[in-house]
Amino acid sequence: MSPVIVAAAATSTDWLLLFVIFVLLLVLAFLAIAEMGLSRMSKPRANSLAESGGSGRSLARLVDEPEHWINPLLLTVNVCQTVQATLTGIVAGRVFGAWGVVIGVVLNVIVFFVLAEAVPKTYAVLHSDRAALITAKPVRALVAFPPLQAISRGLIGLTNVIVRGKGLKKGPFVSEQELLGILQAAAADEVIEHEERQLIESIIE
Image (cartoon, rainbow, N blue to C red; front, side):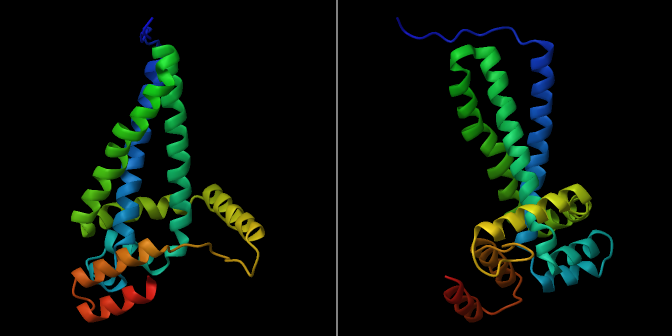
């Protein structure tokens, strides 16, 4: 007998969970724009945008101290992704029964990845200035949230305990990919010459 997907009628609880999932997807899309936009922003460009005031000043502060926002931002992304994936699995399991797990995985890998990762980050690459400016103030408010700061510092401390050595007080806040992204943005804005970009890339890689 071939397997048949048996769908059950969605309850009010399911609709509530779907609404929460939708909100989480919006938050994840915004955070993806923020992560890509801020990571691609160079200090000279941020300082130039800061001259107009407003979000530009917040942006300049973030770019000047990446260790203050990268870890809390990535932690928030991780929490939102975990909760969203869990809720999706729960709803899919309740509605589609045994096939719910498979359907939940497919939705998370294909649909939600496109909506909350690929599309927002592509937008941030194509409109890096706007992406960084519209997310600067919310990101500053987010990373200033005391509980988030405490958890982020605690996880950094745990990492330093697990990884032997002197440790990093502020965490591994800039990855190789992020450095290359900043470098590409600087070259695109003609802050550095093509030869300088090639030299720095060879050192990083």
